[in-house]
Length: 344
Picture 1 (cartoon, rainbow, N blue to C red):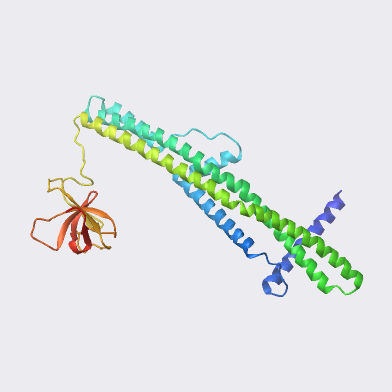
Picture 2 (picture 1 turned 90 degrees about the vertical axis):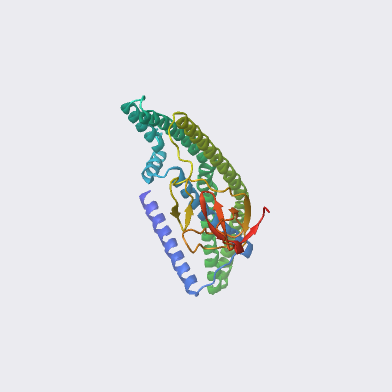
């Protein structure tokens, strides 16, 4: 048995070495290479692109769902040893617990302690919502993408590797036929060539069918993408609802709340634009469409993007070249020449 294994090892090593030499000769242009048709090559390129981007999207999604790389490595190891992952609290849940502990320490009867308790409870709910979102996203996109890479794509890679081996065998047989001298040698070489050609054609057909299945995989991935977006929509809606409830609870406790953006007491420079102060100002009652991009030249101007819709009003200072524009929490001067007024 040991002698047989040694012979098999030597034979396999010799075959591998001959294929390395054959590939080198092909790269140097000293030997001919059997080419596949253009349709097959297009399918192969599409498959390669699908594999590359699915791997990237899977990695990016996992990073979004579990931002801590250490936890991702830990989860990977638990999956490999087929051991249940430990139940860990999220950062939001840890924050909520510490806020609750701090609130109890300062006293629920104090304004600060009571607020800490309210916010801590909300953070815990946000952590639970986040956990549900992660589970939903894993089910909708992470698990299907990983299953595709470890199943269908791995099969395609294996069959393409087998096809390349058959192609090398076929080209080697063609080369032997060209080099055959005697009639008997030619007949044997041609017989080997016919067998190699049949095996190559069969493998090419199998691989082609697998590659053509990539289109159905794209359709499946599209459904996964829709489900992932739906889970994100639900998650953010739930978070928004929780934060609105918290805001109402704090307001009912008589606590002052900021509703005017990053600053409610003074104008604040932000990326070349400014946010208005909390002082009352005339209402922005007209809408305008931006005709083309505009880069703010001063800190009191707004940056504009072509085709976006903003709210405007007259500045009230007699300047007929500018409107006062509003985009979300940002307010600033905008040139009239760059705007098409929609509400007259």
